[in-house]
Length: 122
Image 1 (tube, helix red, strand yellow):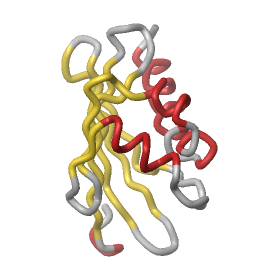
Image 2: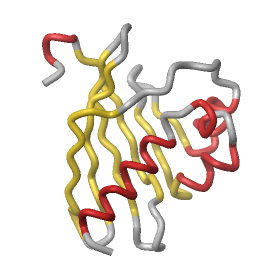
Image 3: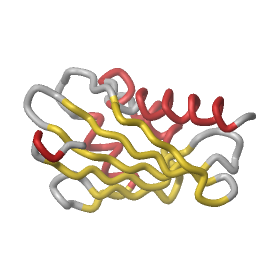
Image 4: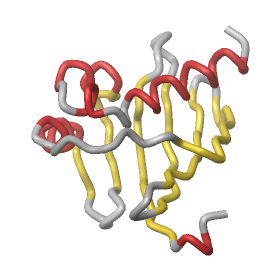
């Protein structure tokens, strides 16, 4: 698989995790998260794989988000760092995701979201 198609695959997986249909389905979320997944949320809270799956399953419906300013780099064989900004009517946040593709499919290993003021989103 070429880097371009790999990045397309990662963007598709990242976008899926932003949809209510995937977020509220523990089976779908589990299929996208590495067994050692950890998240540092916008609040600064550290989430385990199990805790985030449980929290997302009971999440209220929300408008699906779209990442912008998408960038990606292979930082080691099979490990890709993706960065992007999520903009919504109420908030902007900058995100980083570490994707592990060594198994042949993208698995999110680490994610962090950081709130930014609208004037500092670039």
